[in-house]
Length: 106
Image (cartoon, rainbow, N blue to C red; front, side, top):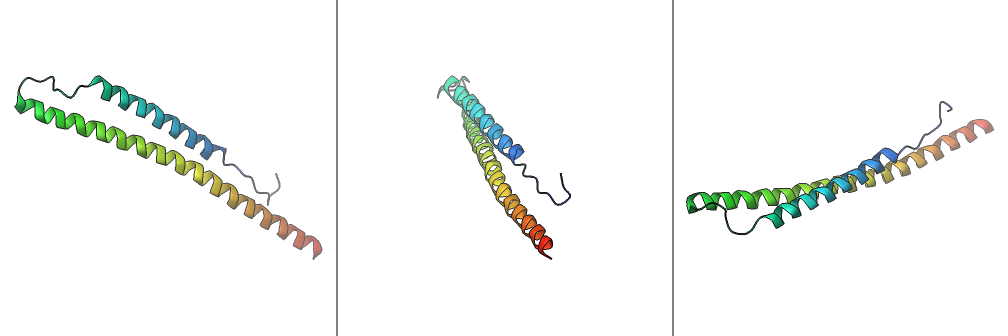
């Protein structure tokens, strides 16, 4: 590799984006399994315990959904950044080539 050569390496960001997507899918499946395993009825016999327990379960499921969304958006962001980095590196490479040609003519 020459000292002024530009190397394009967006594979890591693309791979991270795919892995975040896979993790989001796995997490969504986990949340769906959790949701399907629970009924609307509380397993606790006393309302004093049942109501807070059901509220806790609802909040837990909402947080699971929110985390899955964050994972997916993070993965999408990694893919977008890989594309932006690739475009920026192509522009830098064109600039290096133009500078080399300018020196060759000088």
